[in-house]
Length: 474
Image (cartoon, rainbow, N blue to C red; front, side):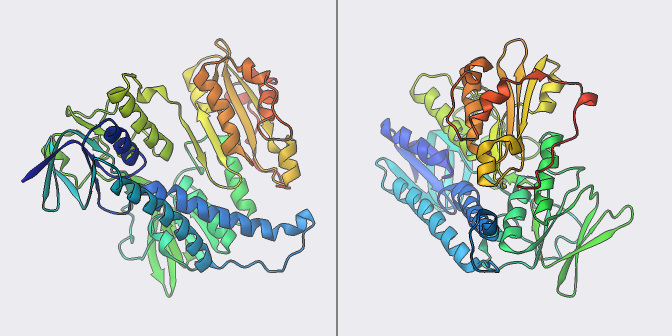
């Protein structure tokens, strides 16, 4: 027997539950399916747990620096990882249970727990239940990728998901991958007390960022005692006694890195390979991401893909915006599009990196005449007062339209201050609107008008100054 609904939603990440709320409020009968923990990646293995742990790591770091602020505490500072995990689990569990309770108490919404699989473009099974609907929304997210490197099947390894299950401190954590996940976990565990080595196959960390940002991040991590190995073109894992050994640079002179545990932080893959999408005729790209148009519609009429599984964003805020786009088009007669949004995100190392719009490299590649303004955090009063002067900020502006093209704020409060720039970009306002704004002193954001008042033509690459690293007093 098949039960018919007005809409089926597969997955309870950031887009799914909110879409269920809008659809049921509009009088639709909705089925929502979840095979694991309610809330998806953000609540269970992403933003909420990791940023909770980042906060604990920051507390330990500041406790060790207490004397810099004239505060005397006991020494040495120790970290109870069982308590760190208990605090994190309490916060995460509350969020997940809250979403589950909301959905199960929602009028006109039926929750199914289990694996969803398509049997046709408008039919899905969950266990023994058969469901059908004219509208189906896929919100299945992603999971950590495991690379096919030599020895990976022979050595016990962690991913960013499984590492969250431990309640002890690794003696020496080897991290394979120099992206934002590797950066956050690396600094976090170093501050907890582990020795940390980060191995990256590329020539620099965070290769999607500008070179000066990458260099500054490396400087910040090395300042805290994190070992960084770049250009590791061949990585092989093995064991030697109780140690895990990562052999790097196999083609040339190799150098082994000995550690107690290894984290594979080499990206994520979409949860699309077990949905039976071939039976629905839904197209995917070569990496398994669902192909969509500018309004989240798949290749099959009546099926949409929202969140990380569509490859158009790997963040909670882009997933939520996907929900907003679908709801606006379906219910509000508001033609919103994926292409309306700007690239924007934060990397939660300490200090954080806030990014909006184009990078400096992307501006250069576009060939448009541009202006740039820069300032180190060592020249920001609020950063000096807080004793956190690592990093810098820079903003790029179109020299003809005077619209802001992009910005990077690597520094204390950068994840919040970047929104001053982002809001101006969405308003299409000339940069002079922000430049002439009177911001509150002392804040990090108050320097944004100052930077915009000191714009200069973007120099040729050969004329640029060496990358900004970190300020020693930070």
